[in-house]
Length: 538
Image 1 (cartoon, rainbow, N blue to C red):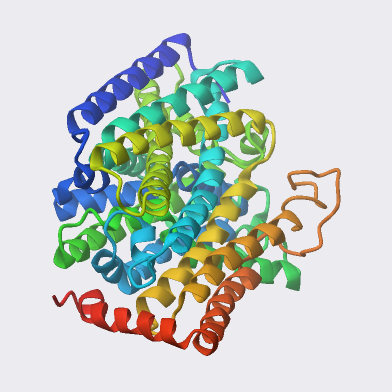
Image 2: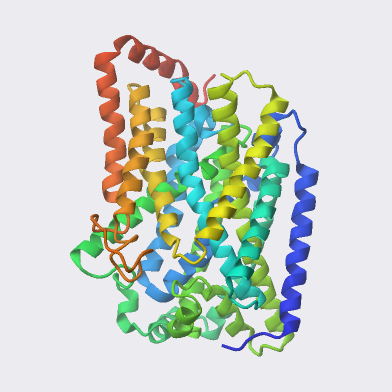
């Protein structure tokens, strides 16, 4: 692949600077007053359904979705196609099953939803712990990947010092966005990101299809040749294998994605910024339409990367194919010295950069909000913290969460940390999904059941992941030279998801026997709010 000139790199750097300046200015202008909690956590509920839908889609489509899914499609074909469809299906599930009840039940955080009928410190603390467990791994993955990607985009030598500087730069910006902008400021960044992302993706997909005279069959045949896999490119098995166990692992991964991605705290938190139930319905319609469109574009771009770039060049740049979309833009731009090539590559690189920034900012805000609202204001102060105090704590917890993420990302920048993405999604599917569905739809759900779902599901996912093939025992594992893999899969969902639901059910049944009075009180609170929860009836 031809390298771009210093003029192209200068253009990319200028674009980066302009995007950072614009987004920082918007965050400052949209930032909440120091004593206005509603503005900080929900943006005054002032976003229109279109804007809120774009913000939800922006939070939902992370840098991992843009880069990793495109790379998996380019290298594994069919397996990547199914992953893209599962990603879209997860948001559809959220729309039809959880979106409206969540909006009716919650106020600022997931802890507000879960503590609705089961108030107390234990529930708030558990909600905060699981929120951190689900967001911190994602933050580490995004930031550690930012170092490698920015050095690749800017043409900087791939050295540890350069990657560390890039990680600190992106991490510092994410702290500023979350601490200053709040929900409204990060929503504006998400809207800019999704518009840019759709625009550049449409341009790349159009150029790819135009190369093959708008013939999907020709594109697929070229992708089979470019991938080096031949007909296997359109069959399941290139990513995880074709044995019975590998096929079961593949099913486990897709189930985990469908149940887990949309239940992650930084996604559900966006629903609370809709002003009412009709608004959340329309917002989710816009979000689902946007995400589905993008996933279709990802399929075209990934297939185009396999056809036009080839797996040999893609894996040489990154074994997981995360630079495939950037390499595709180089090929489609033609002559590296031409203005068209410079503009196309700079646009794609700038979009990747703003995607990284917006993704980590949304996750940081979710983690900081849970620490400030659930842990500090309610668990520590029993809901008596002054708004100004809680706002100050939220800002400083953004700094704390961001600093921890930066330090961890720097320490593991040479590791293959993709397993942390799987871990975060498994926690969402195994802990958050059972807790939310039981809390919203089961009258007999009790505090013990809730704690069992949250702690049990998260612990099961974590323990199984540590002893899985994704961590040790295989050449592609985090520790390829060690072998302590006792769990024969790379995704824990097939075991940890049923475990999370079973823990919630068993805990609630035991509670009904031991604490009949408390169980009746929980059921009474649920029945009092059931009409408003499920049908928005006051």
